[in-house]
Image (cartoon, rainbow, N blue to C red; front, side, top):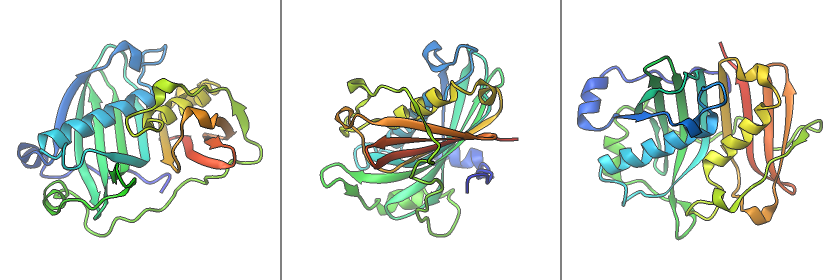
Length: 255
């Protein structure tokens, strides 16, 4: 749940990497991915996770078989945000497998100290029917090889309804935030959480766990509002389109 540690890396890491089941990729941290202090931002990390996912699917020859995915929930633990410039190594593997969705862990480690651990609940999506789509059996057995045994079921961690004391946070949704699925890209929700965190700089100075749960699609015509409420070491935020929740978000300090 919210405070549980993320799954450890697979024990047979080198063997699984050689087979392509575990994916490694290096990438530099660009200047547009960091805060003024040079540390990684949540939204930049979210884009790195999407890029790693596309690259991993391509390496497994599944980028055309399963091209569309929706991140139902993403957890990002920024243990150390690093210092720009830096080279990151991403390690990606399946943490849990279902018939239409899977859990995916990605660790990011930097040559000068960045350390980020992530976990995401990804749904394989049929763009034509706009519904979850069954995963290929071979994909389940190969990509799912490192996965913990047992069924993977969805259970929300965050309350989709804003707290009555939540306060508005200025945030403008742009046409440039819309992806090819015709709704707001997942990384934009993380940009909104960064915007809310900007009002609480003391939290950004600590190791943080960020959580975003996607609940419904957004487009600029929705004119969404962002509201947030802090309670001690936790900052909760919500993206709302009228009474409809698009995403529930949380940033909480971690040890």
